[in-house]
Image 1 (cartoon, rainbow, N blue to C red):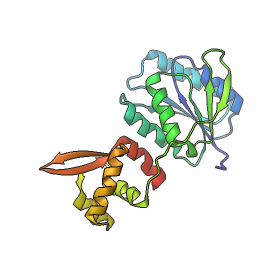
Image 2 (tube, one colour; image 1 turned 90 degrees about the vertical axis):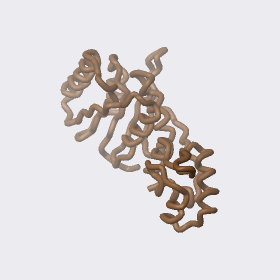
Image 3 (cartoon, rainbow, N blue to C red; image 1 turned 120 degrees about the vertical axis):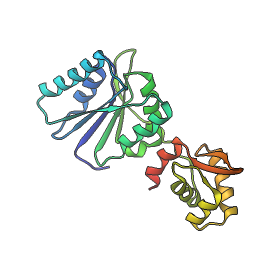
Image 4 (tube, one colour; image 1 turned 45 degrees about the vertical axis):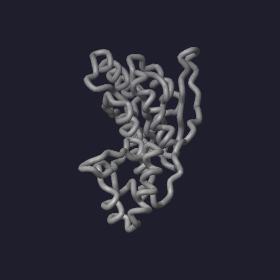
Length: 213
C-alpha cells in the first residue's frame, strides 16, 4: 500500500507513553492522523490522557489531526467497529499495546481479520518498555463465490432460503447447502420464525463483507 499520509491507531489508557514512543519512532508528517480508541462514558483520567496526547502533538508542531473513536461495551461489536478503522486510503499503523484489555483484545482480533489493510503493527512490552514492530497473522475463512453472494444478500436481517435463492439466482437446494456451511463457520445465525428457518449475518460475517465488497 503506497500512501504518504499516516493514520496511527491506539488503544488509549491513562499512560500515553506507548503513544508517544511509537509516534517518535515512526515520525509524523503533515496531515497525519492519530486515532485514540476510547470507552463509552470516558472518565476524567482519560480526558486528561487525551489532553496529554494533544499537548504532545502541539509541542512537535505538526498539522496532525486527533480523533477519539468511541468503543462499545460489546467485544464482538468492537471487532466489527475497529475493523472499519483499517479500511482507509491512508498508511495505517496500529499499536497493539496499552489501554484496557476490553478494547485491546477486539482490536487484535480485528487486526488479524483485516491485516491486509494495515501497513505496520507495533507492540510495546510491559516488561521492559521495548517497542517492536511485529507481524500479525491474517485469518480469513476461505469462501466460495456462492457463499460470498449469500452473505452480501443476507446482511443484518433474518431471511428465508427462498428469498436468498431469489436474490442470488441459485436454486433453493444450493442455497440451503451453502447456508449450512456458513452456519458452521459462525458467519450466519439460524432462527426458526413461523415454523421455518431464517438466517442473518453474524458480526464475524459483517467484518468480512468489507473485503468481499
